[in-house]
Length: 239
Image 1 (cartoon, rainbow, N blue to C red):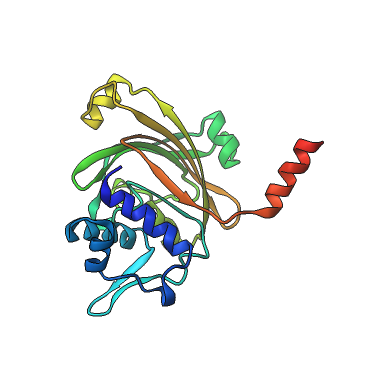
Image 2 (cartoon, rainbow, N blue to C red; image 1 turned 120 degrees about the vertical axis):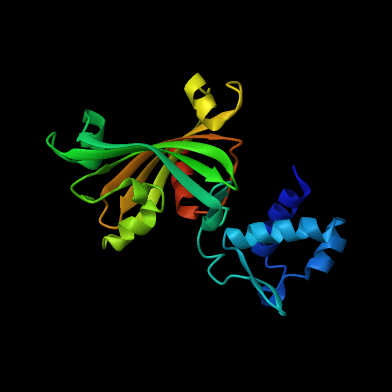
């Protein structure tokens, strides 16, 4: 593990342990001394924490934990930890066609429903990291365009008056195809992750399904301990 990554993980742990009274972290100089690293390494770690929304840097004052951080589960990976300004989407394919049987089931639409489908690359800091294929019901988004695909689907959806509730994601390792390796600019033997997503509106309706192929993928998450679920699983085992 890189030193900056270790510092990110360790600071997250200490923040959750409430080791910083008033929510203020030590200075970057103090952190560099504590971890035995350069200030550059500490700056990289602090930037990562700021990018995923855990801390904010107040000029001339210091590093502070954001108030909402401990309330919600935290999930971050190489894509979500990068500022939006450093993420570029390149649309390679875009079109509309009849819903498949699977899409009809997931979107709960009739066979006459048309569905938008697109293929895009996700590029972080100039490096291609993901291939994403997605579909959305055309009835919800009649004016979807490649320009939207290359900007922000989330911003577009909420600008249409919908409210995004949550995402359901499934992760599994996979082998790259030759075509995927060419698009990602890597060897076919490169380790890769297959990610399936369902995006859900506050009404409970699925508005997007996507499949992502990612390389050099790692995900970290912090979630509250749910005692009720824990007890239910214990009862199930005992039964």
